[in-house]
Length: 349
Length: 274
Image (cartoon, rainbow over all chains, first blue to last red; front, side, top):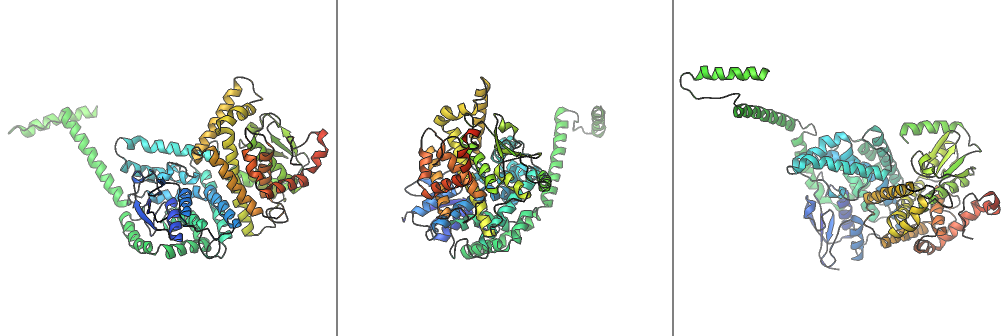
């Protein structure tokens, strides 16, 4: 029981211990139960023992990767947040987790992508996307074309090495589109108003239901937090905290007072140190990126691309002999002018 | 259904009362229908009976293709066609018949959550067992699914459907689960339902709701269907209150059909829990 447990999870930002929902669920559960975990915050899923994040590494029993498996293992080690739940409450937990995964998680990623791939951060894509992941999460990151072009694909083009960066993002988009289509059972799901509205509607309904279930209690079951609280916290708090440009769902969540208080409560009670670190970080990142206008980056890139184009043209001209620079002492200027002349005529053809 | 179309359908639905000639379409009962489709169809029938709305069951080999969403069952009411339990519940609500009006907010939230649980676990487990377990798929499912068609169409359709379902299982992460794990999940789901039901007659005490209909549809079908093994029905039988729940609903809402067998029993595939 005293074996050292190591948890590998995604890095955090914006005052959160991690930006990935699954990692947050596991971290919250660990804090609730006081499980002694050594936490490694990394940003490369290939460095985790199972190849995906979050991952729990134990001395004797290997590694586990899915949050539910991790929680089951922690329970076996006697770190159980649910031991004083009645059987009915345990059943409710299962039901509400199903509700979350079917209705809410999909749309959440629609927002997560808008910021996870901001160039001012250096986050790789949560690899949980590569495995099981609910529809709208995928929709957000890959299918909404605006997000895909501006955020996701750009991140991949910047961070994956040549030559993969040319075809990997679009291949992944295709894979993810297939997955969403299969999961929702639609014949033809394309990014667009309608699919987006339906996703949001499901997510809003789910949040309303959670809010109704929580009503004015501090936690979902009594006065101490349980695994359901961990799940809800893990999925809602990124939506609440992360600065998003398109924040319809975020506004809806903020309008549900009891849910937002629930999240901030847990954050301040169980993750107080993150809150202090996070305060300084958003300030700097917001100055860097000037909040999603990306003006400095845009101009810099435009300038760079113009320079590259001019350099390319000049070198082509030089190499192919259209323009020749000859170092002749006296007739130099005349010869130089003469050789440029035919080049101009050629180019006009 | 798109949101705009839904709103439109609701408005039209509210205008007319429930007609006498409403029809429910499902695949052929004896030879073709599969476990998951039968469960969904029975759930809808139970729901409509609980609402007191008459509906005639019609079996068609191509029900799946007639359905607007590709899923069975679907109902044809007046000049509208609505498929799957969720939209049907909304449709009947628009016509003024609802079972969950008496619930408060917390209970409604719980009801929706439990319906998601059943869909997430029970329905997916049924699909898995039918299509991803090689024994069941080859001995039972493929033959049944394509029985109305002749060679080579039967092979093509069966394998196409199997491939589609397996892709879906891959997408939601169930492909890596073994059969034992799936049975475990079903047990867990049944225990959760059993805990929630407790000793009450229905899930929300005195009145049945769509959750009762959904649970009845799935559990009754699993209990009365013969698969390659009895493992699945054994797991459900271990929860005695669920068993008596199914019996109670069968007796209350499907009793009259036992007497009118000659007219063609409207729902039962033969065996019952009596």
